[in-house]
Structure formats: C-alpha cells, structure tokens
Length: 366
Image (cartoon, rainbow, N blue to C red; front, side, top):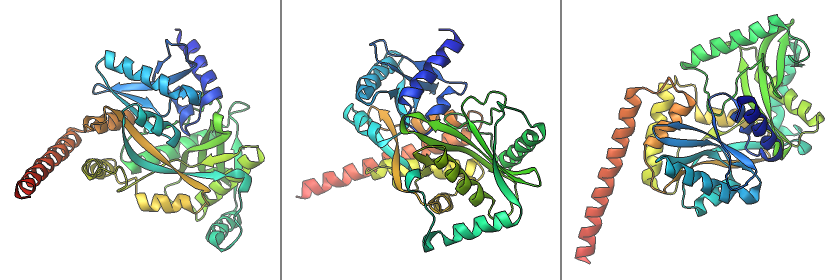
C-alpha cells in the first residue's frame, strides 16, 4: 500500500476507534501497521526490537473486535517467531488480552479530568489558584498558536530552543515510540498552546485528540530551564478551560509510572523495579515518580486509570523490557542496561530455585 494511502487509512481508523490517550501518535514515523485479513476494521501499530513485536497501545478497532483482532496479531507474531506484546494498554483491553493468555503487568496510572465537572473552588485548590494568579501578575498569558493559519518564526525558534535545553538537561534524546513531536511543519490535528511574556515564549504545550473519548491528551509540555513561578500551573489550568470551552469531555496529562505496584507476582515486580531503577538513572533522573504524581494531582483528577504491559505467553522475559526501552529511546540503551537486566533475571531464577528447595524440605518434613 502506498505510504500516504496507508496513513490515511490509519487516521480514518483513529477517528472511529482511537481510545488510548496516545493513540494519535501511532501516525508518527517508524511504525509498522497490521491490518486484518479477517475483515476487521482497524489497525495495530507496532515495531520490532530484539524479536519482540511491541504493539503501540490498544488495538484501534471496535471494542467488540479487540479479542479477535489481538488474537490475529498474536498469530501473525507467532508466524514470524516474535514475542507478542501490547504496551501500554487500558483497563478494557487488559481483560481481553488476559483471557487470551497474555501475562499482565501494571506499569502506571493515568489521571483523567472530566471537563464537564471542571472546578477549582475550595481549599484543595488554593495553591493552584495562588500560583496562576501570580503568573498573570508577572505578565504571562496563554494563547493558541495555529501554524496551519500562519507561521511565527520567532515563536517557533524559541519553542525549539526550549526543547533543546530540556533534552540536554534530561540527558537523552526525545522519546519516539508513543511520544509526539513538535511537528510544526506538519502539525496534522495537533494543537499548540503557548505561555507568552512580552511576546516571548516561556513555555508551550502540544496536544493531540483522543477521538473515541471526545478527549484531549497533553502530549508534550516544555518550559524554560528556570521558569517563572506559576508558569506550568497557568499553562495547564488555562488549557483545561480552553478545551472545555471547545467541547471536549475529558483531558489527560499522561501516565505516571508506578514504583512498586506492577503485578501480584513479587518476582516479576522485582524484575521491573530493578530495570526501571536503572533506567531512570540511565536517562538522567528526569523521571521522579512521587513528585510527578503530586504535580499532576494538583489539577484535580476525576479518576485514575491503570495502564498495563501485556505479553504472550504469560511467562515474563526481561528481553521484553529491553525491547520497550529500545522502542522509546532507540539510541540510549547501553550494554550496561543489558547486563543489568540479565543480572536481575539470574537473581530471580536463583530465588525461585531456593524457594523450590525449601518447599521440598518442608513437604518432606510434613
């Protein structure tokens, strides 16, 4: 299928069935697309790393078709001798995949804000009201930037410079798998909100649609290295009010990774914990889990939804984590990380052998 025709087909499917918050980003370059040969309407975007086929979020299809479509993709992976994984998936998809024999790990929670009930009255939000008021008193305001209607070279150069400084401080490149990009030359249906002071960009946000939920996803947010007090609070609170006025029903700022709540199996939890602890160090400490949760919570999440890694078969293998890390940051996964994963896996095997030996002795004594 010609490249443009394929992308048009993917966008059409997204507009009908795009449910996952990051689903719009399957249009970003580097994905392969799986279409059903059984006549199912939809698409599964994926990449292959270390012989792991990693599907990007939920299958984009009607809810009643998720089971059959996911199973068809699993058979496709089996034919190519790839491990089959979906990440990250939502609650509705997790149960279907679990019934198909996939293993499940909880990797994060996502705050969902019901825009129909948006309100920051009461004592709970007094700090947010104070911070946004101070930001306005410093002369900051939020505007929508529409590059499709007219370009501002000065603003765009400032946005790109803020992004470069952010990436340098983070210590790695921009993530690519399900994270968006500025894409100012080809904005598509992205929306851009800027914090301005004296007509200069202090911070900006790139937002993408969640079609099937009538929602909006705050995909990228960048601010100056030393932002003025209240910059982020002003940008997010004004963005939420803006999208409420535009008729959107929900908004989300993305998933917060969890520290110790991955799975019921403590062995699997330990593998993930070891790998992620190392990964956050490897990526320059740019993820600080508790502060990230507290930052997002201040805007008043209506509820939190779990996000999951699923993999077939139900036996976990650390190569899956390696594939995920390569998917998000293709050039940033070092041999040291490979060694860390292997050490974690050998450690778990030793624990299992020890437990088996102890249980054998207990059984003998009984």
